[in-house]
Length: 138
Image (cartoon, rainbow, N blue to C red; front, side, top):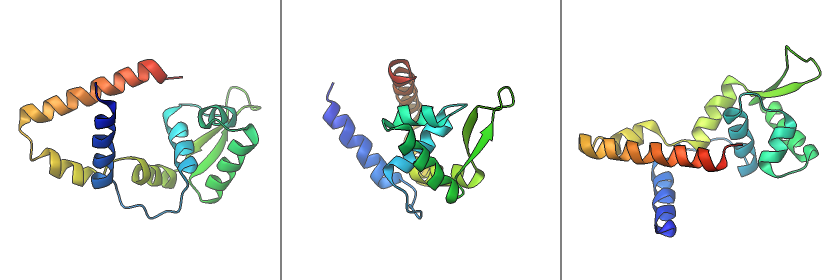
């Protein structure tokens, strides 16, 4: 398997098909919001682990993203001492534009493929996602 080739394909796909970025966000900001989205209940400690930073640094990321209106904190109904971080509606939209492919651009490209090619692409991406989760899901 040629991983370098696969990486070049991936970066080309993102380069051509990403949404226009309008917000000023750091890579860590985006990673933080991705972690919040992927975890059902994300605490600051969870974010520190995912980002590979101290609890204090993760807390600062959360604070800045809350100031921008992208994150909010919520107390656990089961244990009021526990606080989780959630994406706001604005945070969901910003995360989409900063981490996903533009659906209209992607559709335009996929429409150029035959039904069989489309199914093949979907199957390969599904398999890659499953295996990535099997290897790296925490």
